[in-house]
Length: 287
Image 1: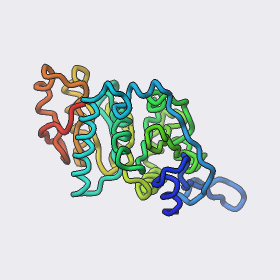
Image 2: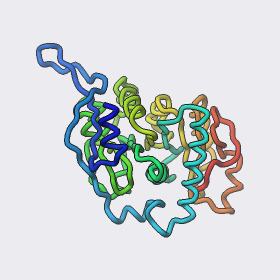
Image 3: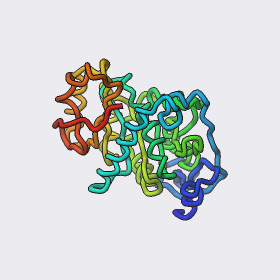
């Protein structure tokens, strides 16, 4: 399987589907007994083409985002420094509340990491209100939800975005109870499988408040990247998010849309590079 993955992803072949699948078992009478661990099921590939308007959101594609591009390159460098000291392949990107720009950060980070790696996977794990596909100008497609429910294979869920040089798992069908899916063994199996086949796995998730989705995902990923937005994120909400992440390794914090006028009011809530718990330090990056 590893050689086939190298052919499909590492060598940049025109395909979107990685040769992995999540199968279901039977009790001998044809009854479904739930998903098993990932297994190899090579299938024809599919490529997705982003809408041209998506470039306006991408610092790696738009000439108007030179400053933002440099910030994401710095973020990539600091994450690379962290992984020299500890395991860091699966990175959860979240925020304290909605509208803080976490999905834009996740997409741009994945695209930036892909500048020097062809084995980057972006997972849309916001199963309540996904937005990655809208940023990329793509239709809503089956993906993670169907995979966790055992209704489709990982082979089908993983697509290739040659435009950005990344692979992509859409959120799939919206659900009102994703916590049960995220707490299942199959979620761990999926993350273990993709982590063994990609250099970086970026997971976009719902905000930490008020739902429990990201709390569950934080416990099965290597680290968390917390996003806050200048003028939008209330200090109490940010503090609550930091407390909620107590005991979780926080790789850093991205402070979005920062201006000199706003920076000082958040000084005590910046996360430094690689913190565990709810202590604060210098900012990791401002985008």
